[in-house]
Length: 170
Image (cartoon, rainbow, N blue to C red):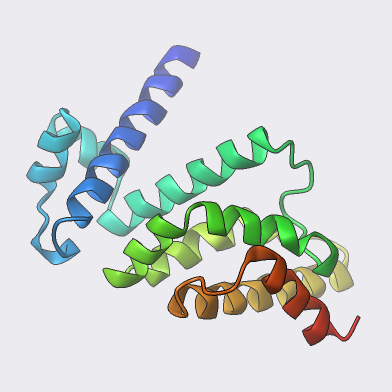
């Protein structure tokens, strides 16, 4: 059964990669599911079995890229971001700036947000203060990311970290 799950993940990533490849050439509205499947060299049913929308495929890819990056950089705390560990957040996003810029250029900001929300926001728990502070930092960080992408990543990850400290008045 483990091999099947790995195969499914592999196929999903192939489909998402195919979609990204096609997005580099044309708008998402002009990309068909059969075209994605053909580019990924899989059947159309594989796409429909794994994704309900193109946006979902992009979100899946962004989550997978984060998981790999976090593993490679030995990030242990992945769902609780504060001013102190914000540099990790900006370094990661800077490393995938080409994909993020493509998503924004093609009107897929919500796919970026969905991936961000999935990997950066802890699920609700019993500790009310932890829940609210998690939401506060995550939405704040996403707002900074959104502006940074729109500004074309003009600032370095270190400059973005410094802005967090200035904003939080540390």
